[in-house]
Amino acid sequence: MAHLVDQTPSSSAGAAQLFAAAARMDDQPNAEDFSALNRSNALISPSEEEFDLILTMIKGRMEEGRGETIYEVGVGDDSDAGLPEDELQASLATLESISSTLDADCVRLREKTCEGDKKSVVCLLRRRADTRDFMEVRVAVVGNVDAGKSTLLGVLTHGELDNGRGFARQKLFRHKHEAESGRTSSVGNDILGFNSQGEVVNQPDHGSLDWIKVCEESSKVITFIDLAGHEKYLKTTVFGMTGHAPDFGMLMVGANAGIVGMTKEHLGLALALSVPVFVVVTKIDMSPANVLQETLKLLVKILKSPGCRKVPVMVKSADDVVISATNFVSERLCPIFQVSNVTGENLDYLKMFLNLLSTRSPNTDNSPAEFQIDDTYSVPGVGTVVSGTCFKGTIRVNDNMLLGPDPLGHFLPLAVKSIHRKRMPVNEVRSGQTASFSLKKIKRSQIRKGMVMVSPALNPQCCWEFEGEILVLHHPTTISTRYQAMVHCGSIRQTASIIRMSAECLRTGDKAQVLFRFVKHPEFLKEGQKLVFREGRTKAVGCVTKILTYHPPTQAQLKAKITSKPTHQRGEGKKRSGANAAASTASAVPPSPVKA
Image (cartoon, rainbow, N blue to C red; front, top):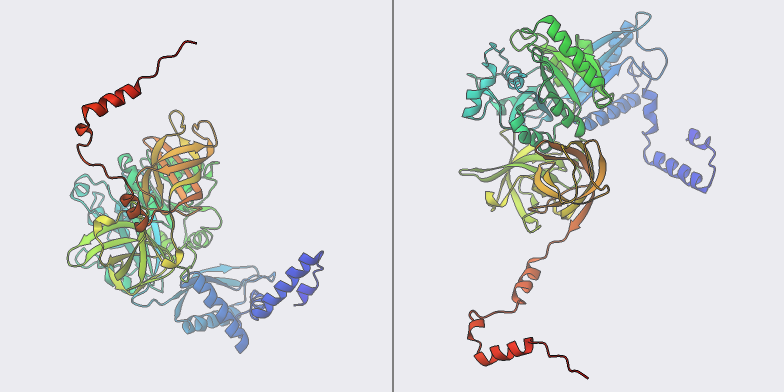
């Protein structure tokens, strides 16, 4: 606590802060001790106390990273980086014994040579997964039509190279017309499983992939959200990017075609939703060298432009993969991979990069549960099934939840009958994971995309109106009040009209505070959510700044309103007598003015 006393408080507030800090440190006896572990030789034959402290630190980092962390051996706050060979081996032995204590695997990723023949090693520690539990990372795959999105996913998930004629993508299509045209028109889902050693576990049997088997063997599952590239399916693509809550975006560019069509549109959408993007340039086997160089040059120029402000990194070695994966989210890096689905060139680097990606959503397993519905199904023999993403908390089988809002703004109580994750039955789903629930005593017609299932502890409120700060990316003319367009916010898709704006009218590039009102139903929104506002070629992005809560009338109030209405008997008007009619006519004539 000495370093706290050295600080001289300038006021009573400063003194209060000092005592509060001291009290916090007394409550957490190990909090200040972690600084002793930040030296390069901390792992060399530690004492029993030090070993327990290192164990606690790594366990905490693994909890934060949802079951995995990257640790660099031989690097610390002290000036000289790296360790001699014998000390390095001793440190690695300590790290491996710690990982086995935590039921995890320790995998060496890269070895770095420092000055004076010293070395440091970057290691990945990943927990050996339970057969019913795995870590999940969602990657949205975007890019122009014919960039090779479905083909690359077919090659990655099924482990077979393409023949250059659309062989690999045939396994992924969901509809007949997609297989015939070769174009994705719906939001597809594909999985790639990695075990605790970082090896791919996808082994298709007779051409089809058994998802349950993959999930049982995996410590980490990458879920690819395969989106449509064609302009006419932009609505579906926007829904996939907002509703499925991807952790990362994989932008595909065909080397021969270059950056054309919807590529910039999809990149802009990912940037607007703050989704980190990495780029994969495909078809390098069939593209002439000069065309490939032109494509890469233009790509780097766009990524460095003021709108993107990214740092492009060409990935050409395993070291590049480790550096770009560890600094991907924090450093505005944008790795660029050049791959071929026919020859398999550089696909190993891409798999290694995907293996090192960690989820961006914070660990909120202990908060009240909040689940967003993306899709609904009616399964014969099971009943109503909803699928979506759990944003907060933990949901278990037989939990009581509130589903809503319905068209009147109410939330209905219901129970969860069973839970599946990636077609595998499980007992619980935690924050940041996708799942599907079978629900008791509810019809599919009562549920729509955009509804939420929340814990009763949240006391959820819906809204008709909300305020948002929007930036107009493109509009042919001007936007003024009473303008209506489609608002995408999470899995909500609904037309909203502008009630008032902070500016008289909005043109391309303008920013304003806008009050929106939903046209059809009230919705469940939260402050800070990103929104996309579109209609035809008009596009605007922004975030929700304020919710105007709507309190729906209760059932008792609605009944009272209906019973208090005056009752009219049918045909009453026709039965009036002629005298009454005449009297009413006379009273209607104004009296003539009397002259004085």
